[in-house]
Image 1: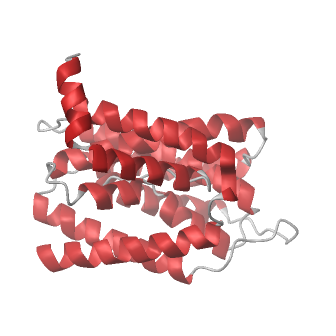
Image 2: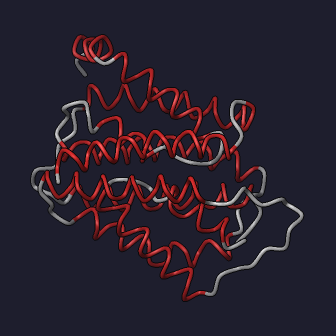
Image 3: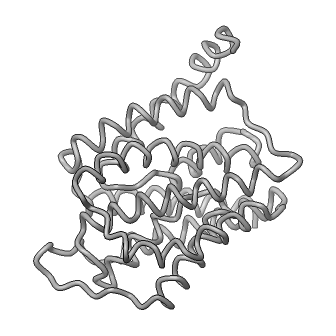
Length: 258
């Protein structure tokens, strides 16, 4: 490893590092990876779009991996209900990541995806109280929802938690803690599958000097976030603030590439 180039990456991208650190703390505190925000940030850095997806997915993997260990200790995973969600999402996330798309199509899809995510986050109801009755989805619905979200996630470069979590809350699928745990596992599975799909591209490339710095940043930020949990922002506050940010970014992307 060239440490001089690594140090230059830190100096040249310190603003980006600070933003990624903050995003990792906020998102991990409520069980998300932050992939949508990483994509939104990277979209305006001038980094090649083929690298943007891989970088965002790697950051997702780092953040939620740290979350999973702690959530597993808390016995927060409803595994029997998680399996149908990932049954179709993983192979379809791989196929989505494997698809060869050009730069304009990528940014149009990214803009639409971010706009949809912003709207769904803004209009979704408040998180369920742990005392409310839960309503599990059927295997067919779980597999269908998971597969659709997985395909979009792999193609665009997100883990899918930003779509899945609001859907599960709206359908009263489980308690907030178990939905957060499920979203973390879903994000990890889809991020790995999507990244493997992207790796099949002949033009797959990652600037490891910058990526290693960002991965280290989100690893530290994610560990801080999962430990302080909701003491910074409540889930509903984070959803509203993120919806505004992602909505503005999505509109700017669409105006530029449509």
